[in-house]
Amino acid sequence: MTSAARGQGTLRILEGLATPAGLRLPDARPVPRADVRVRLAQNPFLMAPMAGVTDGAYRLMARAGGASLAYTEMVSVAGIHFGGQKTWDLVLPAEGEPDVAVQLFGSKPEQFREAALEVAERLGPRLALIDVNMACPVPKVTRKGEGSALMDDPSLAARIVGACLEQGQVPVTCKIRCGRRDGEEQAPEFARALEAAGAAAIAVHGRSASQLYRGRADWGVVRRVAGAVDVPVIGSGDVEDAGAALRMLEETGAAGVMVARGSYGNPWVFSSALALASGERPAAPTLSQRLAAFECHVRLLDATGGHLARARSLAGWYLKGLPHAAAWRDGAMRCVSLDDYLGLLARVRAFAGGDAAGREDVRRG
Image (cartoon, rainbow, N blue to C red; front, side, top):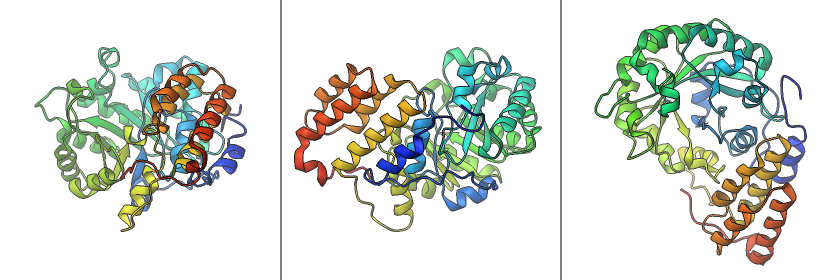
């Protein structure tokens, strides 16, 4: 493993399976660094950071599916401070990733400063930006004053942004929520404080921290934050498909959109959103493409040293809507190795027979 990339063999996997999966081979060369506004103007659809999900394999699939940029899982600045390899496994881009956005979380400005400096040094041109997590609502994070708890302390949040900016290499962005509590809209004023501290863009999830992921996201808050600051605002929450991604842009005035759960088993959501934005009607992936994408994703997970147990979730996502999908998911729960998953795929393909060559799946916007 090098400091610049990990997961040797991923390019070979993508070269063999991207086209059959209806995806494209990402350009592995580092992307020339650009202002966040410029990147969003070229392609506003981003792969959101998701803990336990957006590992190197997931990010590669998102980029192959047309995402402008993909974010790491949230990374502890304390973990970087203490030098844990498990922490760096979350940070380092996989072979074939042109660049990556690294999301950091914590509460101590000095640890953010140290982490930002080290991440910028180790990733070099493969680091697109540093994002500060001020949105995580999980109690084990917020009780330590991290994640969305920072929204109750704008002064500390501003100092954290300033500390991250000391690395001087890449933009610093933030992800926030509507506010900490239901009915308390802190986001517009808080966003102005982050902008004043030097944040280059602000992502807004349209739920309060107390909502967790329940209920519906309030896109009106995204619109009000976009009207309150001059830096680009990125909308997040309930972007379930390509159509919703386009509506987020149109209804909120946001400059970009983060797709999270809408990408589950659907790496095509990004290219489909781009097609819709251009006035085209994207075709749904065929069954053959879905199965090829599942194979590609599982092989990438294995090649990047990811937790292969995550492929059990992948099976549920990619095989959703197929005949006997529940039985296939049950089969995935018994898989423990790459060969097990490939054997499962072979059985699915044999069952599907000729239909796998051309039958389209359930429409996905």
